[in-house]
Amino acid sequence: MKEKIHKLTKLKFSDIKDMKKLLVYTLLSLVIILLLQIIGYFTFLNSIPDFLSKYGWWLFYLDISVVSIVGAIWYYESYSGYVSCMASMMIGMTLGMQTGMMLGSVFGAVNGYFIGAMIGMILGTFIGLITGTDSVMGMVQGMMSGVMGGTMGAMITVMMFTDHVLIFMPFYILINIAVLLGFVYMYHDEVIKDNKEVVKKDISVSLFVFICVAIAMIFSAVMVYAPKSILFGG
Image (tube, rainbow, N blue to C red; front, top):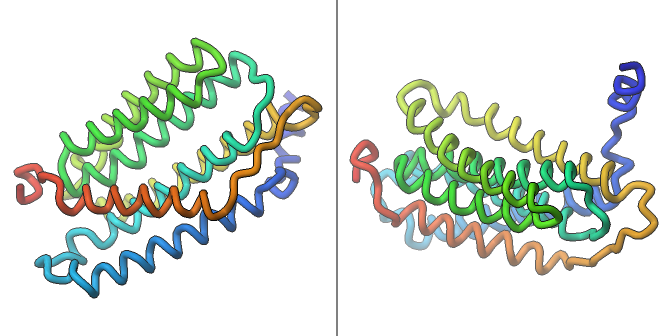
């Protein structure tokens, strides 16, 4: 017990390789995405009635979710080395669950439960599968977590929509980001640290930003133009 407490008290993200780069990449991508959405609003989106009240906060949370998830996957993809079965399960479970929870919740709040659950479940299951490939248990756990996270994420915002959901969301998003930061630390601690055989793979900032922007723009279009539940004016 004392060793566990000592290890937690020594947890320093400043010791993690590429942590500063990860933060810079995600913040840069978020700023670019927000600028493009602002330009889009003043050029053609402002013709949609009540656009800001319907979509404003949810597009913002969508952007944060995209850059956070892509950032965690980028860190995972930046290194390759031996991954134990237990670590593989944690990787697939965390990335699958958080993808489903974060994306499912924002789409659920705007498009309804069906669209939110489908998008969250499919993307969460896919991400959980491909990031848990170091073991069969990791893949299965990742897929299970994607299914659970996607359906639960959409369910949360649909059920809370009339009960202070906009007050709830900042806490929800911050906690999910904290989980992804914990994943980064866990991956560094379990796979990268003190591993002389780990291989570093360079992923350029331009590629990172392009992926974030492309995903965010596609998802934004889906959020705005996809069918809505009858509960959300569909």
